[in-house]
Image (spheres, rainbow, N blue to C red):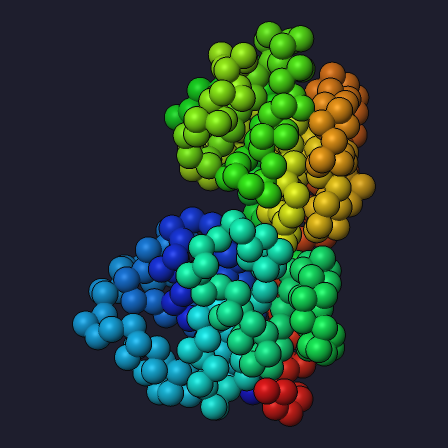
Length: 361
């Protein structure tokens, strides 16, 4: 077979400056192009993504035409020379491609499972549905995500879906950074609203903070606390810190934390779990959705609806140094299962499989 040519479109580069999906495509493109079987290209008008600045070298100017025109041009003209078209999000304009195989990656089914969280005008559910049925093949980033797709759309052929995990290359950082952290702290990372379950988590760890005035909770990212959260933490506000952080600062926080806690009710994958493993940070996880699949035997698990269970599991980890050391060792072993080289190889195999079959659309 001649070298396979793959095209990644602009969507996520315009949507995210940083983020798991854009990082996924940057790492995928970079690692695929290190080999000789596949050549991958990415293209973006007005790139806003920090990862892809390295790839594009410079910002591509905003288009003079509207995106409707650009989408028609891309779908009918630019992508003709590629064997595989792999959009980075769910805009269905590439369904108009007639000369390529269309592969999509599905990251989660959060919009479908938690519809009340999103505006009625949000097109994600409808766009994703069109792409699920219109694609030649679907990559799901976890078995849990595959199962969610099939539960919601049972007439989709399971053979049309391949599970390929995503990875993380975050490494421990003990260098001096621009954030000041307390000596002893529990770490929470990312958004806090709705299914992220922060309020239940906060109620669970408040008794620990009250008992141990030298212990802190650090929340990285997610924006400033809202009024409800401020009220919730009022009794321990001098022990709860919120700040934003770059990747190097995030790695530093993971490296220094007593443990990272991920109380989410639902994740399509859960990249912070791997980030913590990569930074030698013990991980305490919700036992829901994809998280046990990613954490394996390297994490301690709790029921995300049970405040007593959350409290007990967090205390178990932060006050047992021997347990934390064992968890760190297991975390390194678990992380090895999610290398980007492995993910790139499995993705190339998926592309070959799609090209070897007839039209599935």
